[in-house]
Image (cartoon, rainbow, N blue to C red; front, side):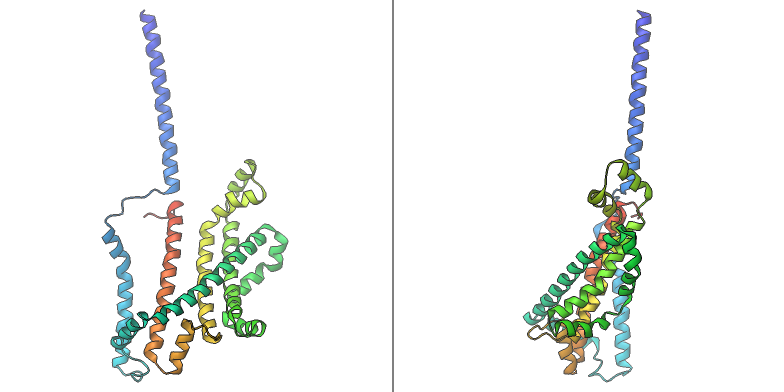
Length: 304
């Protein structure tokens, strides 16, 4: 019996040791997974976080308004050309409470979303093709970068010749201004996919479209989002230039309204529309920043 008891105790101890070893291994693996995916941490109260994010922007706004007011008080320009903030902000409030203003916003944003969507589709296909085929990269790789550096206003004479004064002329310039940035963002992201990952995908039997869908595109997503953000900046600037230069009959957009205000020498209204365009750009930029931060946290690239 003592021998049987000893054997039983040895078996139990061995079982416990195996279980403990498995538990430690599981904990180590889960710990590695946690490091890889950067789990959410306690970030404090919501109000403090909002204030920490908002006060630098409010400070910058206060500085700009202070410089503006100082320029007005110094009589740098006549008051009818440079009205003070106390006159412009009430005018801006009256503007945003009108239905015509929101109709102009809707038209401009429809153009922006349509043009940017086309640019994303074209840029994604072009970037994937260039990164996939070396001869194609050698042929047009530098051309894409050259198109990205081209001022968008240079395209408007050709766009007007090709499409006359119409919506297609504006969309043409928006697309050709944004698509190269999207393509270069994807190309850069694919170039920096670790070679080890590609070999693992090959071992797992990935090839062709499946390899791009399940491995390369997800791995290049952070750089691709940066390309999308830059592409949006180019498309937004191109659109604003297009609305100031190409007057489509019956389409009263933000650019058209700003041009009309300039013709009437209504500086307060011009400044109001400038602030509207600036606010829209900031809001869209915040959306891209949110997506970029989410990806950075997912990849464990931030300490927050």
